[in-house]
Length: 331
Length: 159
Image (cartoon, rainbow over all chains, first blue to last red; front, top):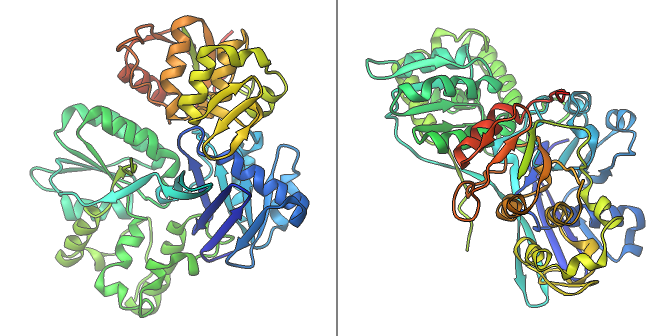
C-alpha cells in the first residue's frame, strides 16, 4: 500500500479530517480531544454503513477496518490489502511483539490511538505522531491531525555527538564532526540512545543525539523528556542516515526530476515491503550506488566515496536542519 | 498517596471506557471534584446526573466522557480501581495529583507521556510512591527519571 490518504468522517456535529502518509500513525495528546470518538464513529460506519448517518470520504480506494480485542488479527493481517486499520489503546495484543512483527509485512496503513511505551518491535516515525485539535465554527466542529513534534534549525556547536548508528552513520559523523572540541560516540541502536545520553550528559556542555527520525517514534518522548531535564541535549532526527546521503548532489542527481522519492516518499514506499521509510531509503541508495556509482552502499561499512569534504559539509548541514522540538500549540 | 507501578501490568484496566459505562453511579456527578474533572479535562459542564453539555458533542450522557476523565472519576469515587495511566493525557496530571493528596490510589504506567510537572510544588507536596522499588518521588525531575528508567519494561510484579 502506498500513497497519501485523506479521510473525512462526518457526523451531525463533528467532522474529522485525517491525512495519512505513512504505514504507522500514532495519535496521542490530551484527554478529551476526540480520539476514542473518532474510532467509535468509524466502527459505527463500518457496521451500519449509510444507516449510521455517518458520511465517510476517502481520497483513495483504501478500505477501513477497526481491530478490537475480539478480532482474529493473526488471520486478518496477512490477508489485508489496501486497508487503513484503526486500533484504540485498550486492544491488548497491540502491545505484543507478535502483533507488532506481523504488522511489518501487512499491506495496510495503521492508525494507533495510544500513549503506550510498549512499541519496541514496531518502529514508527517521529513525524508520524499526532494529536487531534478541534476548531469550532458555529454549531459544527472540525477536528484535524497535527504533528506533536516539529523540526527546527540549530547550530553545530555541540561538544559531544551521539550517533544512534554504530556503523556507516557513525563513520560519517566521526569524519565530519570529530575535532579537538567535538567527540563522536556510537550508541548502538535506538533503544540504547537513552543510556548513552545518561552516561554522558554530566560530562559535556552541549550534546547532540543523531537518530533516525523514520524509526525513532517509540523513543522520542523519553529522549525529549530527558533532554528537557538535562538542558544540554538536542535530538537531531532526519529520516535516516541514508536519507541524508540521498540529499547529496552526487546521489540526488539520480533521483526523479522533482526528487519525489524524498519529498513524496509515500508515493514510492510500499508499506508491505518497508515498515519504515528508513528501509526504503536504504534500498534506494543501494540501487543508485550499484547502478551509477560503481559500488553498493552498505549500512555496515561506509564506502570511502562519501568520505570527503563536500559530503561532510552537506552532512553537517542536514544534521542542523532536523532538531526535534514540541509543536507549539495555538492558544 | 499516588502509588505507581512503572511498566506494563496486564492486571491494569485499559478499557476504561467500557469499565466506567458499566460501573458508574449517577450520584458521583454531584461531587464537586467530579464536576471539576469534567470541566477541566473535557471542557464540558455537568448540568445533571445524566446530562453533560460538551462544546463539541452537545448534550451527552456520562458514557461519552473521555477516557482520561473517566479514569480520574473512577480513581476518585471507587476504592480498588487500578488502571494504566497511559489512558490519561497531560491535562489529567494536576487532577491526578489532587486525588493523591486526598486518598491512597494505585496505578500502573507503561508510557512516557506524563510529566507531573507540579509534583512537589503548591498543593502537590505528597510524594508519589514507586511500587517497583518502594522509593518516594518528591519532584517532577525524580518522577521523570524513574519513569524513564522503568516505564518501558514489562516487569514481573514483586511479591
